[in-house]
Structures are given as C-alpha cells and as structure tokens.
Image 1 (cartoon, one colour):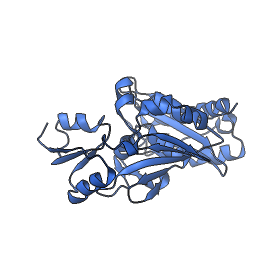
Image 2 (cartoon, one colour):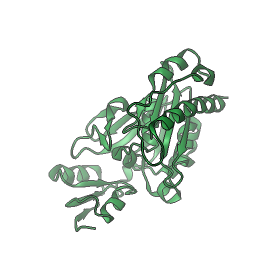
Image 3 (cartoon, helix red, strand yellow):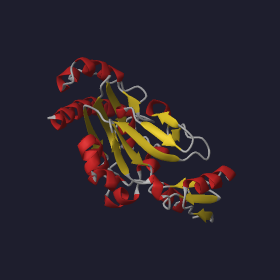
Length: 268
C-alpha cells in the first residue's frame, strides 16, 4: 500500500471542504472495494477521506410513499430493517444476498453505488425502482446516475448522502451469483410502480441497464407468463471465463420471470 494522508471528518461540511480542496483525494465508505485495491497497489491516492464518522449519513426512514436510506447504512442494516421489509421486501432480500457477513457488515449502499461495479446488486435496485441519488449538491435519477463501467454522474468532490426509493406496489429480485465472489453473474430487479413496470439487469453487461421489452410486456400483464418467450439479445453483454454472453442472455430471461414470480408472491 502506498503512503497517503488520512482524514476522518465528523460532519458533512468538513468532508466536503477537504475533497473540495483536493479533487485527487478519494472518499472511503465501507472500503470493501477500495481497501483491497489500495493493498494490491491497483489504486493510488494522495489522501483518503473516511466518511465513517458522519453519523448523519446513517439510518433508514419511511416517509409517506418513499423510503430513505442513508449513504453510510450497511447492507446488513438494510437486510435486517423492519422498515425495509415492510416497504420494499425485495430490497431486504437483495441486501441479504450481498457478499458474505463481513461485506454486509462493513459495506454501505452509498459506497456500492458510487463504485458502480457492473456486477453489484444495488444498482439494479436503484434502476429497477426509479430511485433518486441524493448528494450534498443535488438529486440524480437512477436513469442518469450509472454511466458505464465503474463510472457514475458524480462530480469531483460530490458526496452521496442518501438514496430515496419510491415504495412500489410489488417488487422482486433474483440473481445467479458467481460462486466465489457472490457478485451477480446476472441479476434482475423488477418493480411494479403506480405509473409503470421497470426491469433492471445487473452483472450481464458493463453497466446496469433496463430491459424495455420486458417492461412493455409486463406493463400489460404483471405475470411470468407475459415474458416466457422473452428473447434477450446477447450483443453487448459480458463474455468471460465465468459465462458467455449467450449464456448470460439466457440467464437474464430466466431470472426476469423468477423476479416477477417473487414479486407476486411477496405481494400476496
């Protein structure tokens, strides 16, 4: 690990001031991706700003038709939250399936979406639920937030403070985890909102994306049968030692139907 300066501010303004003055500094949330990268010398920054002292960025709160989750809230807290289970049970299921207990206890929702790993789980939930990413400067819709491989719309020095999820009529998440990492070889998040149905896919491509053919089919009939003949194009999907693009396309179709079935089951 290379030498770097370490900062642990106790409030958001202080954190923003540090990264505002040093745009080459890196924000540290749970550190589940950043710390290994530093240890293996795959990344190097002159300064690290640890957000773990910002208690204001933790917590889960339901307000009317939305659920607000603080950026520094750990995956395990989301998985165990009665508020989440009551509002969006699929989100609790998703959080419970992330990594292993160490990752779930240290990793945070804000760190996960800022990292924008193409196989991470939370991006599918944000895109599938049409969530809003709240930062210290603005609010960004999920459709505009994830730009590419490890790339988001965040500007230098911008800090995610929370994510606001609309509470859907129904939602389901199903993934095929890579056996060693537990990252999604492919995963699909489906939601039925008041205005529309959204279907988001993670793990299959360089970034999370929506499956619009499935959304149109499910908009008329929110049932697995509506997409039983869904053909997912493999062009642009990932192909690696774990799975070919054709295999991932097949997985997406299967997982989408299972996610709809899970959503209907949870709906009762």
